[in-house]
Image (cartoon, rainbow, N blue to C red; front, top):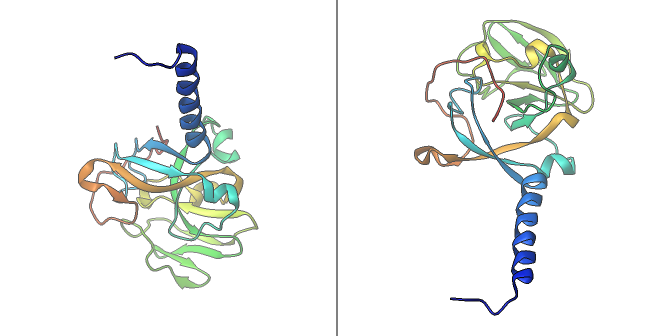
Length: 193
């Protein structure tokens, strides 16, 4: 079956579709995979997720509970992280919030965070700190095996690439990303593929 359209026209249409797909990936949504256990039990090793990029670009506030994908902050780059890497954590506090970890519990503005999304009580302390404007406190759900804000400080908002919104693989966990009580083995490396 042939086409009545000339070859050059078909090539232009193909290039237009490829351009549209690349633009959507660059500015709207992109697939990622989870190579580590820092977000267990919510995100399992090898999960495939979609990262939505519009809200962060529009400056929409990232509320506590939002799972964000971000570029490494300066402290991690100085420690040897690739500045082009992507990491994933959960926002637990935003600009102006006072945060601390005491007795294994996350406190925001003097009250216990509920839910706090952690797989288990934290085995560390975090002295009270007030987040500056345009900063987020991000922690892994697998808090005791996560290289996160409790170690390197607040995340500058401009480092956020997008929000993890949907798990598309494996199919038995297909759906929106939220806290999941299923258990998994910890792994401290949290770079995304």
